[in-house]
Length: 188
Image 1 (tube, rainbow, N blue to C red):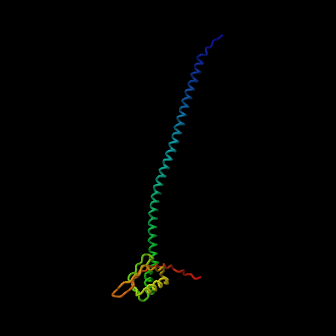
Image 2: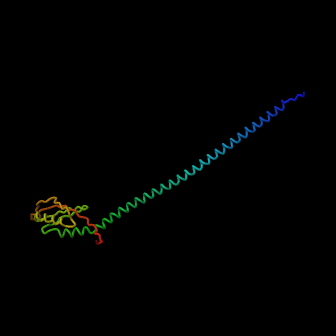
Image 3: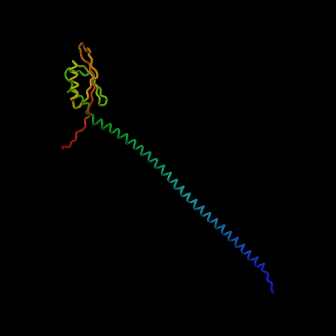
């Protein structure tokens, strides 16, 4: 019988398997490192892209905030101009009001009434003066109430005074101007 020693052959197979194992272990380690590096690179790239987007959004938000501030300033200027325009339109609409008021007072003041002062505060008018009698004051108030320009005449005070050695009745009346609106020009 021939004896064959299989120990060296087994030993060589073990060495070959061990080398294969170490080579596969190395390849798996290299593959794991490559996968980790690729994952790390992809995540870092996504973070960089998101940071760029965030910076872009911050710049756009800042520019939009500047535009909003400019718009607010323009709106404030517009509102100021509109309020000025309304004041001018109100003055324009009522610019002849004083002329009409004096014409109406000249028509409505009866004989024996002497006006001392006329003060207008908004639509309210305070009239003070002297009258020869209380009946003339009553006539003045009735005339003012019947006037198309004046309404709500109220006697504030009446008292007897001596003016230039004459006995006259001093009076104070308040009345209100009715604001005239433009009549429509169209006919029905």
